[in-house]
Length: 78
Image 1 (cartoon, one colour):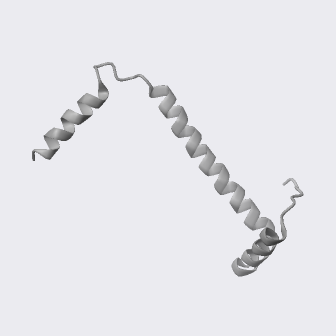
Image 2 (cartoon, rainbow, N blue to C red; image 1 turned 60 degrees about the vertical axis):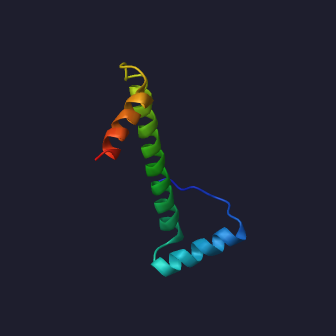
Image 3 (cartoon, rainbow, N blue to C red; image 1 turned 120 degrees about the vertical axis):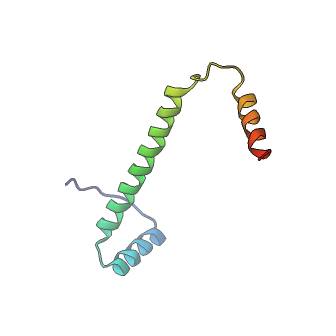
């Protein structure tokens, strides 16, 4: 595992120390968890963007919004 030096302001350092104490883990563990969550969020965002990019323009049957509105009108009639 690589070591990394980070600089935090006093409030962030105090919060980190307090959180680590409350969870009974090291401050390093809190930072690792935060980075893992940030990476997972980034991966989900990237996957969504890639999916949207791959499917852009796939609808070739006229105005998609018109089709959606027609479907919604059918649902409203029920």
